[in-house]
Length: 212
Image (cartoon, rainbow, N blue to C red; front, side):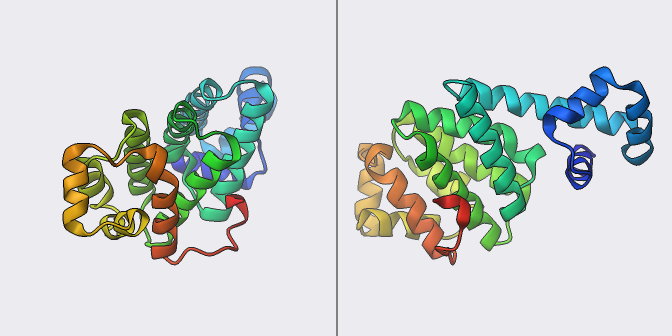
């Protein structure tokens, strides 16, 4: 599978760029690596890597920021066990939506790390983590939290989502329902408190190195 190939290339100590370079420039080296991975697996892995690299590049203002974001994602994958094949593109779209909402750089990356850590703490799958990241991306793009995202897209994967939002807003269940209906749960005001509340509710720790 693509995920298997990505994991294997990481175990071989190969960078994203070097894997592409092997495919494009080094037929002799490629023959040795295909004996380990299989040619189709390598091609699928490279296509997956390229797709999320392009997405992260679109969310980065310059090459330095792009490199920093890619290095962050690689570190997150190692510390949190994130599946790059599943989460790479959602990460790029997430940081782009965050940037458009005025949340940039280390703050956006730290929020992503806490979301991913919350899913890890609950034993969520890679697909579930990607789904949660997409739900937050959609909320950031809309500029507000809506009942559908919180109760369905988040709630189905993060059972503590609704109670964490209550903690973040200081609202009762009824007050939260009213706020959903009025559209007053803005991400500008509540996104970061919500992420922090989720992180704490799932056993978050200040020892998460990539969150700071």
